[in-house]
Length: 218
Figure (cartoon, rainbow, N blue to C red):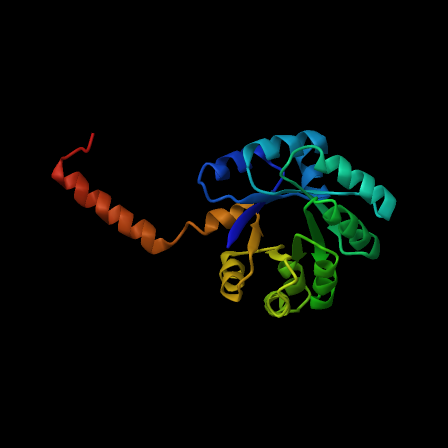
């Protein structure tokens, strides 16, 4: 499974990229607004930090304007992945951009039927939002299972399942067991994956024993 980080905080991205675990970045208008910086500057800076796909989302809602924005974003760097919403106009835009060789992330997916449409439109990634489904009493991971199963049935569909709106490491593990290709995680969730109390306990015991020897490796 590939790990993307879901943020527009450049310092966070630099820190996580240093671990070697980061395969890409996703942003959205809300994250860009939170950064307080111009979108074009942020996307260019992020693209210089990571080699993998960096999702940059259009803000227009009409096909022609979406296409113009998408093409402008794609010119910022070779690893920009244009992000469009799962609407009729968004899928029209996805079809044109993907036909031109521009990677597209179709976002705000909440049903397997929508995911099938996005794949047929040539989406590079489909972003189902599991946490938001959980919030309204539906099983977000059931949606991931359905999409993975459908995509596996058709070799011609090359769209990767990018699990979004991830709230905790359990979502990540469940999605990986289902065969999802990517999980995009808020920085705090990715950092939670490092932690386990037995790791901390074991390390403390090793260090205590080592201190008793009076030795130093350096």
